[in-house]
Length: 234
Image (cartoon, rainbow, N blue to C red; front, side, top):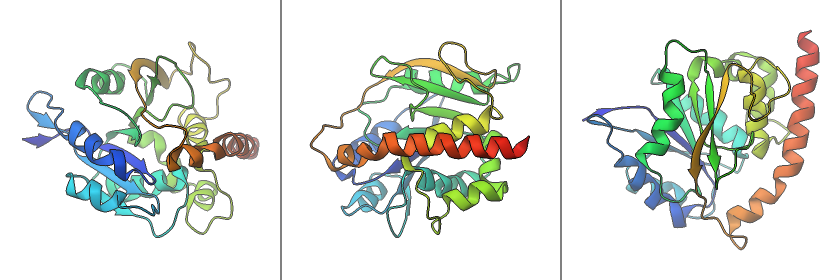
């Protein structure tokens, strides 16, 4: 079978879930095509990388924990751009079972050549959020992350600033050209919110859950950084 839309997953200490998730996604057959699963192991201290690879994913293991934003940045360069994928999906590593219908809801708007949608944002646990990590993209819309030195300086492994779980804020700003506000149900023309109702399995006692406690601080820091870059553009 041919490979269809690639799926990028950034994972940190997800050994317990990554195998099931990769196997689940690998079986989502759409019109005789299967997805290609890419996993970026963000410096995990468990066997996330080898477990994902044994389950059928192509894996990039980062030498240390850089945070979700940097992991996404390196995955975009290593997998999506290297293989010239014009569109792709990103999913969180702590998702429960994913269905073909959910993936199709994410990808359909960016597949429509008659629309200007550059990114979709899927709902999680019944809630629409601008911070959801379940997304589909036109790759071209994310090229500023690669071509603009200001983003490179924030995302590469030498950066002293940790964006981490502020990734989604950064993506929102980049894709819509720094238009504000990005709100449901009236996002900028480049973005569409999608009712996908993905489910997460992470519990409060897990390493991943504790890692996400840094999210509010990283989100607020990223907002300030993006506003500063927007001001520079004027």
